[in-house]
Amino acid sequence: MRPASDVDPVGSFFDAQFTAAWEHFYAARFDQANASARALLNEPALSDLHRAGMHLLLAHSPEEYIEHARRAVNLYGNLYTAHAQDSREPTPGQKKSQKTLLRAAEEALRRAEQTAKEYPIFEVTNDELQQLVEAAAEAMEAELAAEEPVVEGNAVTPGGEMEGLEQATRTTREDDGAEDDGAEDGADEQLELPSLPTPPRSRGRW
Image (cartoon, rainbow, N blue to C red):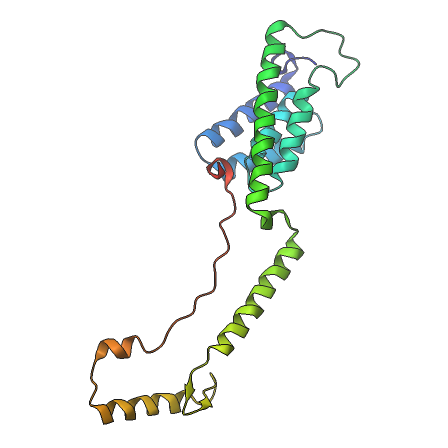
């Protein structure tokens, strides 16, 4: 395959966009880097070298990172064999660069697969994720219902009898002469929804 530097002005344009995407990445501007990489991958005339590099960049993103890593490995591995019309043999320097890039892609794939094992929730579809969120909400509602306070054997419902609970509490305090503000502040326990783990985010994931 012809090096990107030897191609026409279209190839030079792709090379500039490719370089800009990686500059965003190394400057920790991950949203811009990912957007630039996806835009380049939509270009049918993009060279395999550029395409592999954009897949390698997106192998560090939060979405479909395993698939991007696999494509980078495949493209780098077949960089000089994918097109039968390319008769030129790669130079020793090109072969060395190919091996370096292939190792980087293989390492990205290894880490992506490891991340998927640690955060399996991020491998589900949007519909499956929505179902998980709804199930978690239903489970929390059931837990909250089970934790409702009881006054003299009667359950206090959230919509109707909270006033009775407050009155019973005030009467008890007046009878006992209790005026401890600290105890009053701690009377109601707050239950919080469990938070989902933060999705892996670009290079910071590793």
